[in-house]
Amino acid sequence: MNRMTMSRRTMLRGLGTVLALPMLESMMPVTRVLGAAVTPEVAGPRRLAWIYVPNGIDMENWTPAKFGAGYELSPTLKTLADFRSKMTVVSGLVCDKANPNGDGPGDHARANAAYLTGEQPYKTGGANIHLGKSADQAAAEEIGHLTKFASLELGIEDGRKASSDSGYSLAYSHNLSWRNATTPMTKDCDPRSVFDRLFSNGDPRESAEAKARREQDNKSVLDYVLQDAKRFQNNLGAGDRNKVDEYLTAVREIELRLERAASAPPPPIPAGAVRPAAYDSSQERKVGISSSSTEYPTHVKLMIDMMVLAFQADLTRVIPLPFAGEGSNQTYPWADADVPHHGSSHHQGDPKKKALLVKINTFHLQQFAYLLQKLDSIKEGNMSILDNSLIAYGSGNSDGQRHNHDNLPLILLGKGGGTIKTDRHIDATGIPVNNLWLSMLDHAGASDNKLGDSTGRLPLT
Image (cartoon, rainbow, N blue to C red; front, side):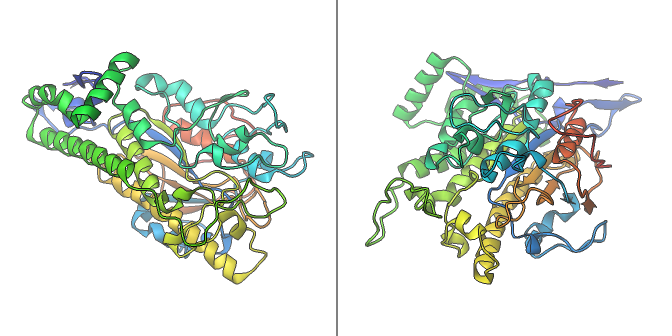
């Protein structure tokens, strides 16, 4: 006989604050044999995430040479060697609606727009945008009612930092997620804003009052739920008490990091540097995305921490997170690649430019590895959040020089609660990428009949 000993929706409450809890053993079904409780048998909730990187990849250093379970990690993918047992490499997928199909130039806008939708964006620079529902929103429609947020759209780069692409609206270039054909889901790129949303009680007036009081008194959100937390922990077993302690400590640590990031002085302007003029479309480079480029690594990790908290507290099970916008010319000095990303992706076969692109690709994967490590360290029963997730990492562009949208660079991390076969390289040549998205939805309990130009499912078992 199975029973639930504690509601999964149990919350800690305080003024303007609702603190969701991580998955605890006492929230999981327990099987009793002759009156004796045994280990929980059910994994935690299934999560879906899409991490997007722009401008394509250096495919020579990305693609493994052989298919199957015995494949050898490519030079770039060796960055994720620690997670090989939970990784599936998928090669050959196609995003056809990112191709011109008679619409002329604009591959970056189309790549971003078509990646999760499988729809051809209507070419316009005005308000009459038209695309389609994205995979994340298809999932949100099916399982979003189970959590506080049906989905959580996160980002790193603000859409105000770039220009439109060859007559396509910025809505296409900078919104990965679409509720329907005319409604993009705006991403939140501010970690402080996301933190406040995650731990708000939903009442704007009370939440604003609590936020103002916290800032005035220099208090943590935890100070407002501490009494409730002490009462709650008295009723937990030792293992669950430790898990709650770890979670509360993580919340406070992120608060402190947000405070440090907010109070840090702006980076000094190098001697001789001149603030760039408005973007000139005749230039290949969009010079100086922002003066905050030196803060990019800190920003990425803070946004990843928001993602981890949201999954850990089961506040949402669906998150898209682009690391940068399509056509981004973010520079990467911390990766020994202090060059504009987009310009480097147009390498023209130059070995030096390709080497710099590999460094940028590797840096992005290092940030991804940070996410994977954090998710894998949080246990749910005899699995981890990573085990219970399916996280796609890839791009709607393949080779940035060619602007092609076949043979997409794509990897899938996680085990979908143990429902998929991992540690292999799949040959998916010519198959629409939306076939993979439909399979991911199936494994998360969010099945849909069709998505964009999908033709079926890509088997993952």
